Image (cartoon, rainbow, N blue to C red; front, side, top):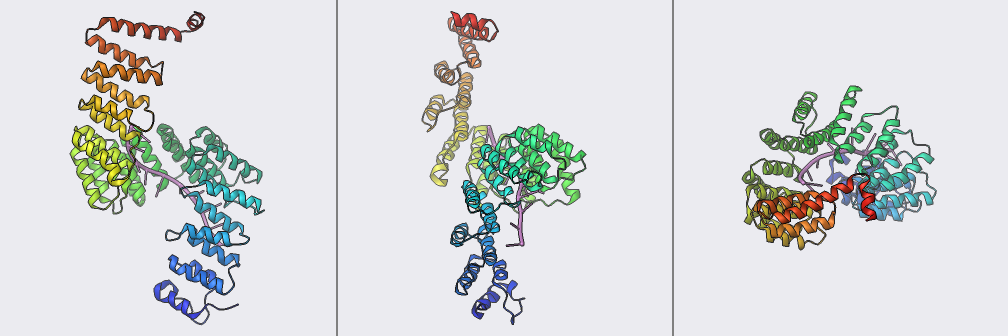
Length: 475
DNA sequence: CTAGGGTTAG
């Protein structure tokens, strides 16, 4: 076995102070060096050293290298994949590390493939494997995946292990299967904070904010103290539910307990205040945050936009660009909402074009909805209709509905009739739109049309009465 | 030799 070459050690001592503390006469082992890497550049040197000293098959040392490449912020997942693939017999630590890394990439399914490979190679998964498999499933929103992994947890007898169970709750709840999540949750006799948080987070993320708040209360009643992650979900629920008072209490709690206001928690707080119209408080928090990301800006811009400060919202958008933050699709929802609320027709059109041209963001349904709203409010009904028809995908009832209400406001029956036909094609029993149309006819004094619409509505209602449908079907 | 949690729109 060769000791590491002095030049390598010297390189490390020069480039990173953490190495200088090592005793010079006894060179540190390669795995310790691997542990102390702070950049890929350093890591590659240790890797080279391992190869030249024929220690690359030392799985312990190799796994330290892998950890850095796969998990560190300054690592490199592609390098990790290569390293892993060159390892002849990866141990379960290495599999776990790779599964963990792959779970958070754009293709979380790779984590599941690794698991399959692991089983095929007869490497036994353990309690460090499952949390990340569930993470992969929740990132894919795959309930089916959760069920499959769940069965493996049971087979391996880990269904009482708290990390696995927490993964299970989180997997089901974030993927949208709240009943499965709740069933697992209810069956756990000793729930820790993470498990409560996972369940609360699931409710909050799937628009069951009221349930999230109820559960949060129960958790506090059980004597558990929330942490930052719990509070972020609860604040999000407060924002959606309009619970300003609870949100305020949470901020007081955070200050009392000295909970650090990081980007995520700060953003959640800004959003809570902004959504509830407490713009002064929102601003205060916003400007007090030393680190902000695009979500923070989005929350603030959107808050201003929908509470009657359209100009301020656009002003903040300009500031965002100056600060070098790259806007995303959500930013443009906020910006277009501002245009909509402020009636800035030209600017709205400009931003809508700019999304794709300048930022390569493909407009989604939400952006089209904003534009239809804006055009509709400004009476540009034909342009709005054309925009909907030009969309790559099929319009839904919501977006046609936005146009219909604009038609109603302008009293444009010609466009309204076309829109109603479109809606009825998507949703034949939507009599609400017939009511709107017949009201428009009435305002125009077209009584015969009113009557014919009412007749259809009446027949539709009769069908809903038990007993009538059979008579009708027989006819 | 390893563990996990959170934020923004509609």
